[in-house]
Length: 149
Length: 202
Image 1 (spheres, helix red, strand yellow):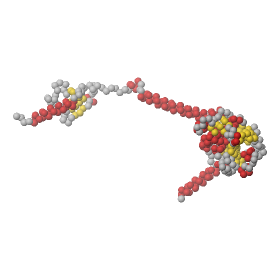
Image 2 (cartoon, rainbow over the protein chains, first blue to last red):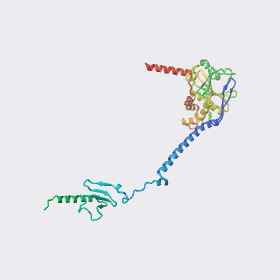
Image 3 (cartoon, rainbow over the protein chains, first blue to last red):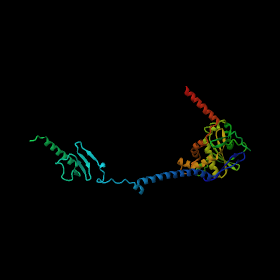
Image 4 (cartoon, chains in turn green, yellow):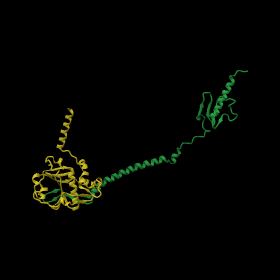
């Protein structure tokens, strides 16, 4: 509807009168006002989603500022304070600790089980060392229980 | 000379003049103008197109086929006829009887005729026992103009949207925008509410 037109506002026996003029341009402008408002609304939503996307990118791929807050790597075991080292106390008085070079087993050392050097230091056979120690203690206890000859 | 109207009220976004007549007398007239436009006492507008001519008036994307287009003075009359199964409108409550869709279809057709002819057009709606002259509110005309493209998309039409389709599309908006409750309606609603309350009390 791109043409202006007139509707009669009065009707007599003789004529159609008091024409009321209607402009197609004004009507299209009135119609496009709604479209502009929609466009503005869409633009507003675009800004919101754009801001959210930027925030998500910043969060997922942090820049130098966030790298400065990076959590420092855990200290080497040799540097770790003793209080932080895990420790397990056995009921029989044997203590198993995490040493600087591996697991350290302490308590009730026997001659059979005591290593000659690097006392109690094992790196990956702590369980077998503990069982050896237990067996040696059992053997010494059995020898103590026998009457003197 | 002024025409004689029975009543004039604002209904469905239009300032409407109504002229009632006896349909049993008028429908026996042989002359088209006397039969279809009984509000005219002396004038005899010239019939340009009738329903049989199937003349289309196009104001892209609106297409309309009024029941009759007549030349009257320097302007035209665009006539829509809605017999509504020969149901008479009540002279005291015609505002409730006049079909909103018929009003809008009449306006849409008159707009198309006015655009194509370039002449001033008077929209007329003829019902069984009354003829209405419609003066639309500018906001209603603007809505019909802007709604044509929307109605075409709504009805899934490829090329044109008909006046009746545009009317059906815009009717809810018109009923909402120009809704009014006259005294008779208000009294009727109040009476209904009281009857409902009385029924619930039993």
